[in-house]
Length: 325
Image 1 (tube, rainbow, N blue to C red):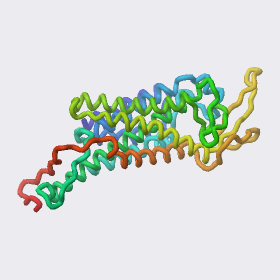
Image 2 (cartoon, one colour; image 1 turned 60 degrees about the vertical axis):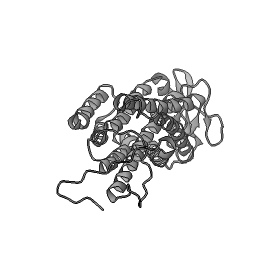
Image 3 (cartoon, rainbow, N blue to C red; image 1 turned 90 degrees about the vertical axis):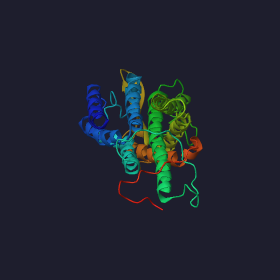
């Protein structure tokens, strides 16, 4: 597992990304920064990362010709750089490292079940039992946070890439005013459905993985519900931040004798302001919304996952040492 997930998987992924022009040279560095610690944490965390990468890469290619006409910062294939990779997945590396600190590196995946409460005065209230209880709770919470981060990123990517293809104009989330496609903070029915779909897909991928690895008895459908929720809420949070703190302007251009409106993300000559202030960049909005969804996933784990009816076994006592009293 160690070599496969920390070296081989990132190497194959970056090779594919370069071939498909999904990452530039700095983006490849970012992929290693994210991929190595995530692969060292667990297979489930690696699944979150790679499912997000491959599904969003495919979605990005839908309707490229139309997107090139309306988006001021359009790049064929996505062609993401280091800043874009880390703004989306940098927090995933932090969560993976926290998971390693709690559960250790290259550990097997456990069911997404919270530990039952331990009575400090009862037979299960020994210090080693309480430490094991704390470890299981943190392990589930960190996995939930990691999944919600990538479910939100996946939902937002799907919404951004598919929402602009809506046959009707999107509406600004703060005022419901119709605005040009590609405006920061704009939402549409297509986009909202896509955000749910992106999160739902992440949850289903996690559930199928758990079915295959842990079996029907231990796979929790709560991962699907939590991921779908994160996909929708994350996209809405991203849109709200974009509407308030990202500049969107309309630039009128004539292309092949036809007047076109292209949305730009910074004040330039000839662009009429649509909404937002030039305070945050798209990368900063992505990072903040991802951070918020990771925190939300961490603290809402109790709402989606059951309590394990079996007491958490304490860690084995090293040979020659005395058990804790």
